[in-house]
Length: 233
Image 1 (cartoon, helix red, strand yellow):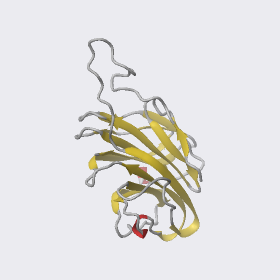
Image 2 (cartoon, rainbow, N blue to C red):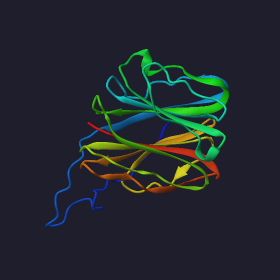
Image 3 (cartoon, one colour):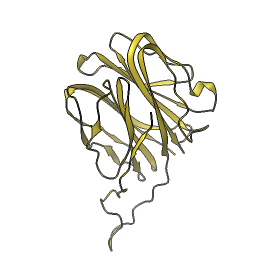
């Protein structure tokens, strides 16, 4: 499935595109950037594999997000780390997972993701370039069930020039995430039994509060998980 790119003009932290006389000059952003993403659905099966995100290569950070039925689990492949999950918002019938790894252009980048039993499910994987070897700066996660609106949790980066990456995943293929604020970019879409979105914000200065913006999604009530990480250069 093709990745949909919706972009908006970047803003400074002060909400202006250029400083006025007497204002401090905004710090230019030179940190990590989101490359691309891929997705795959699972139709009553037990395994998922992804193609490599376009343009990604050795040293990029790969993030993979999934949903699965509450009675099932997803094994962590060799070389990958479970970042958050399994989250089961509100005791719902859906579990939601997030994993990451630093790519090295080997088969370990593209493992077979194995469910514990046959599932109607799906997932997505995105790549970030320009991150440090020890890239995790800060993170937070939250689950939501039974509402049509959501508010992304806040996450304050401790280092300068961080990319704030928010990952949204829902257990409904017909869902759509909307209501994104200006100054961010969204890469996302739907695939069988899951909808997803990778959302990026630039944080050139340390101790910037990222996230905290609100949005809506179709077909409530739904179970969604929101993972936000700040990634160091």
